Image (tube, rainbow, N blue to C red; front, side, top):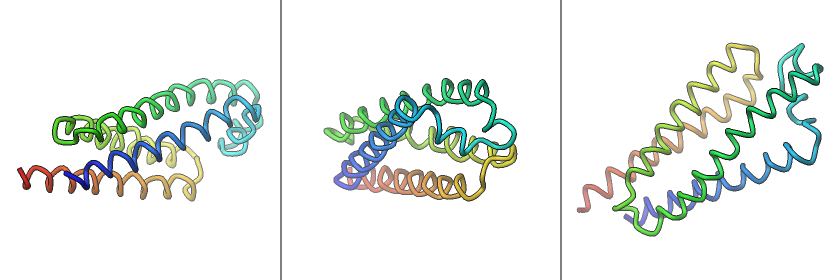
Length: 137
């Protein structure tokens, strides 16, 4: 149970850090980071950058909620296994599947391949720690 407790805390902290960094980029850099990472010709189109950042904001808010709720779930991991499964499946679809689609649509392989590896690590460790905790019971 201790491994899943710490998994929730590490993932929660990681998500909250990503949330803070993205909120900073959304609200204090005029979308510069996003215009630099969008595939051509969208990065130079102010309307495209604005549309992307507006949609990205929804993802960032979701990430913040998952991060905060991971910390809440860490108080009683056995009781909150469903939260681990929510994170795992979000990582599969919002993570790996979405990143793979973006790569096929021209987004930088170098950026999104790194995140696919991170998604896989979160999925595998979460799955293993849930199974270990269940085996202990």
